[in-house]
Length: 443
Image 1: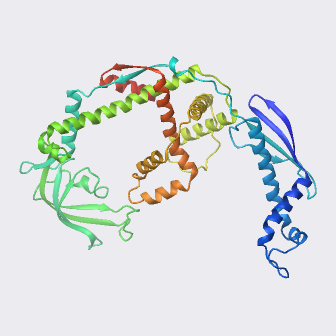
Image 2: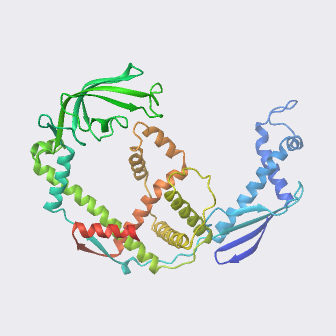
């Protein structure tokens, strides 16, 4: 096979490949010879069918396979010999469109190769890690939030009207067209007004009721209601109000601690402090990681594959367009134009992505099976009852596995750079950390 370079410009490469008719014929003969021992044909013993007859029967089918295998072989040999790593899948097309059997095959292969990426001296990178300690004020605030979530309800004064957020204890019976229906009745049911537990319009009509009062609640079941026989139907619920109760935050004491799995209040405070500092550490990591990426973006320069930049810019524009048009779920929309802002962001993402990938490759950073399994399990928890189906989906979809693996790999490379960089610590307040995190979203 003849290989001729036709383009060598920056990262762009193009080659003309010529597969001779003889090479194709030899490849077809090789494939027929390999398959011959297993072929049976009427009038011949297994494995004894003459090659000319096999060629007549299967030659056309094998010709395409032989052509593709020859192209793949020369491409692999080229990349191994040249050391080029294509940024995206090479474009391959036949250039002699009037090809017929017995002709040589002319193929054009073009691609952009990955650039040479300069070494980064981690020791010259200076970073500042923000440190926040969980003080008494932050711990008390968190405990107050826990107490509010663990609230109790106490009877309001006799004759008090129910407010949004109160708990109403009631008996009710629902009827459609005057007939009671299954699941439409209950006794001593505790309903928190504003919780959205009942169908739209129900809870709102109970605001203002008093203990001992009877009230008819008129509602319409949603069109998409789960019970088809009730969907879209008007219903009347006859309600008897047994009690009206107001929310009271739980006392911050040992009993509250036990409700959250701690032995006593002291242990709960310790657990809260650990959780808060873990949250602060995560937020501080986001800040220092952005500082590292900004440093690398400013200090490292190399040529970028334009096809990657264009693809990333299109993806960014598409995502931002859908963020602005949440009602559009499909792709049945007009062309979305990329702007200079999209391209600039794409260039940063491509540069940093290639740089971190190269640092990780040279350092032999790997994502272990255990790390992948843990990450998949974490995501599977978002689909209660369907965890096994999610696992199977991920294992059968290489693209999804890559999407899960990529951030793990990136974080391991970032940690590698942190280990080699000059990192100082600065103790700050919770408010200062929050401002630093907010600044990330504004950039």
